[in-house]
Length: 139
Image (cartoon, rainbow, N blue to C red):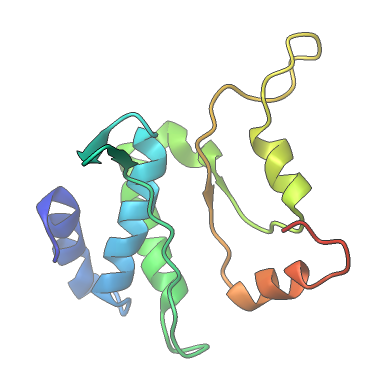
């Protein structure tokens, strides 16, 4: 399962952390997908598949080491692509907030972005679920 460079990174990192190697590898895949963007892809039949991975790491609270896996992957991702740090956000509270982060560039005001890459890291999925239950939520 731990193929290629990301597998090598996972194997090198695993002895230095309590994080599960599966979590490190999944976090690396998600981060690399954001860094390289949608252009690199494989084609299966007539369907184009870019490297877009949305992992949800599950484990016991306080002992599952989910945050440790993500943090370990982030060390390598920041080193490989220092400019990618601006692609990482957390604390989403609404769908509008997400849209605002990646909305098209407005030539008049200069706000918005042409770069739609975004890595959203939410340490507690239950928080996202709770926010999505709010009346009128678009998250």
